[in-house]
Image (cartoon, rainbow, N blue to C red; front, side, top):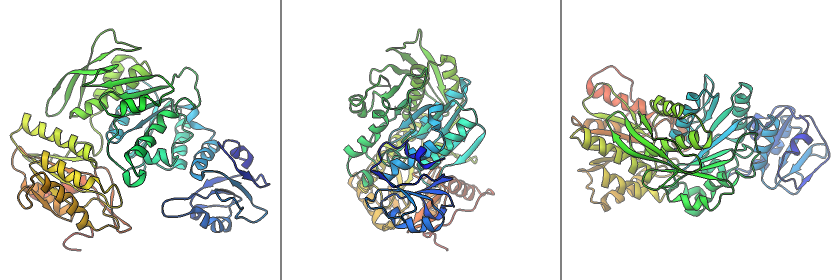
Length: 525
């Protein structure tokens, strides 16, 4: 594809040198540049891609896109100056793949907690309705029968990956795509040029302030998904719609920023799609949906889901609102879609080796997420057993430091016993991170050595918690879930909470099982 064709897709160009080479690929990592490539020099938090322009040229780049006002390239090489290289990268990749999002009905899901589960629920509803739907989440990309891992840690994939996945979906005959959109992904333009038709929010609570600087900036990043609906490419027969959580504080904030219609869902607050008559069992939840607003139901709908916890009812309602209010799918298909999703990797995932207590792995890594997970565990313990709630958790280094103490407070208030441990300390002191959470636990009446412990090694912490469990107890490992590594210093070490939980359980039960994964904190290295 000619450079001029790609450049015509950019929202803004400040200047462009002569030359119109044929572009054989687009790269933002100079180490991956092949002859004929267009290299996009981006400025990031730790590196400046403009420093690597000489290496990109050496490896065969025929054109450069960057933000510098002075052309840092040889006279014979085409250079395009743009205001924002990250935004340009997304549009260039979209153009290179012939704008695949314009060939799909695009459903974006954002929020602090529950995004991945909600994406899976929407995807399940679409499949139940007979639609050819793909999904890109922070866990994987699903394109028909093909499932691709999307990374080690949770964030929206980079724009080149997103556009490549969308192109594969379009080529495979997909008609719909559900795309999980994190605040980082929105702020860094990873989902620019995705031309969303529906935008869904789960909730907006305290998270990622290390990156965004303030809650206001964090909310503003989330709002980009909704503010962009009106300007996105209009597709025949598809009406833009925002799906808002009437129970969440983000409702009024986002509604004020909309230029398209919206539908609401909720449990406590009046909403277009509302759950009533909720009943819980240890393995499932039943509820009734009443619908009002622009597309009311003629009668109540009854739903059953394998997901547990009140927060998962909210996630179900978001998917139901997309199906009923957004896509006008048959109600029975929406019911089947909700019922057919049996679980999501690392989201309240039970690990059962025949033990006489409940073991759960969950992704809860924010104060709100931990609170909701522990409330669900408490409900299990109170309603269906006579046991205690035991939680293992940590807080990540080089991330939102304010939540560390808060996490300790939540654990002390809602769990009977808590074990504070590692969760990607990175280059920060693990002991210092744990001390902040311990201080929060003590502030809420926790007593170290009696109701909470600090154990640096996550494997030892999970094994310790499993060792504390008595019949009927609920043991939860929170914060890592599906992630396949843990970062110490600048090194990613293989790690899987689900493997660790199985290792701890099999050791306690005297059964064959996996070895406990090893970390730099392990006693014997």
